[in-house]
Image (cartoon, rainbow, N blue to C red; front, side):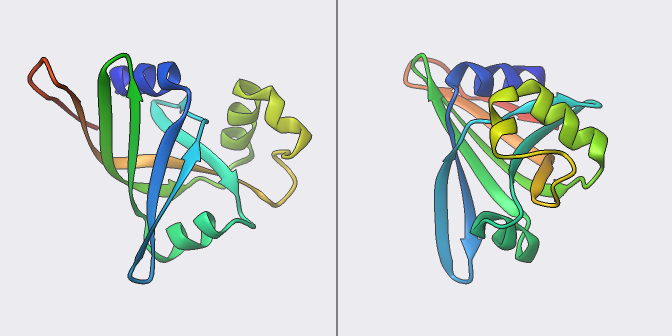
Length: 130
């Protein structure tokens, strides 16, 4: 799991794919946080991505960095605890101008049942399950 975390931190931006009915939806994200041994992402409950994940928690994350790319097939599970939200916002203090752990909008979700594959054009793919 640490290798996945390190890859996403280094990449800075990753792309999160969700489903809305029968249509795929993809958007850039930039938050990744290790809290209590789980990897978390952050969004706002007022955004379409939050509603999409509530209807179907299956998602895929993709990022590229240094000649390698990662794809993570997973489920994203909401953690509504203040401590989880605070940990994320403490890791990304620039988000505090838009979010607060007590605002009713901040949402953090942890990655569950993940299969990550790191690939490149020069090496065999590496699979990481967590």
